[in-house]
Length: 114
Image 1 (cartoon, rainbow, N blue to C red):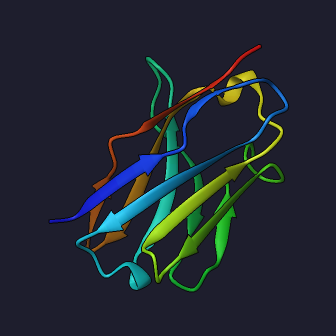
Image 2 (image 1 turned 90 degrees about the vertical axis):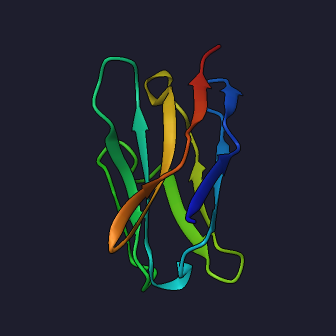
């Protein structure tokens, strides 16, 4: 059974930083494409960042330059380092895995507010 468990969300002031973590289990993690998505109420879930099995990364326009996605295959972990956070980054952030089919975590809330 594949499980993705996110952690690291919380309340942070504008300009601050957070590091989200996602622990995967039940999957051949080293060959899995991993992504972070985010969603606000009433809106679609948007792709934030992708990291391939090769380590290659891509980012949304809003994340590029401020967020960094990384992975540790030995620990089966994927991370999202978020810097210079803005109120518009407030959302539920979801971990996503793609290996023959899609898998989602339960999400972690990030709130950027003073």
